Image 1 (cartoon, rainbow, N blue to C red):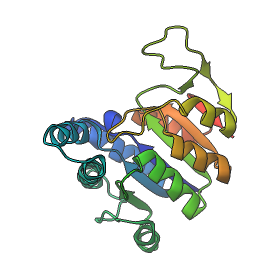
Image 2 (tube, rainbow, N blue to C red):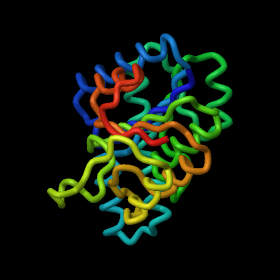
Image 3 (spheres, helix red, strand yellow):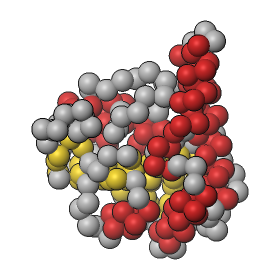
Image 4 (tube, one colour):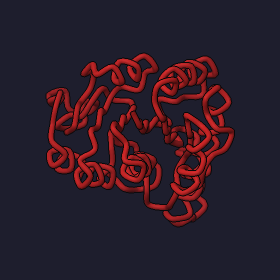
Length: 219
């Protein structure tokens, strides 16, 4: 299978052992699949974006700072993997070339205004992926933010149209932290990409690949 994983920077973390464990699991997945991983900027991106805003930077410039942070995180993950190419592609054409000689390709962001979720969804569309996994800091898609609304309802399954409706409320500011962003949801909808939204733990990636429903399935 061709599998695209969006690994949120917030779940990626800075702990070396956690990064090592993600690398081990992703190597296991790459043994039998063509794997593409898009890594978010997380705390590093938000910290630098916040400082840049205080200094008067535009949102577009803040996006470029965030992209740089995602690529640094991608390099960390590559360091923990045996199967990944030792290169961070800057666009999908480079991804395509790199995948010709590597079972795993790891990248960060690509263009201002696109979160890494959107980048990953577009990549899934571009490579005609069989499965798109969004590993985030929430265990699925809810009717509202479960951290703010204890009555929020979790969906085990939903349609792409339902996903678009729910995430339309989210923020598009640089560094925004939402379960999945609107552009990504619309790409999923137009391409009918089978998508899992899961809590970003290494073992959950393996369980999702094996077809176990542990978050929200969108199809």
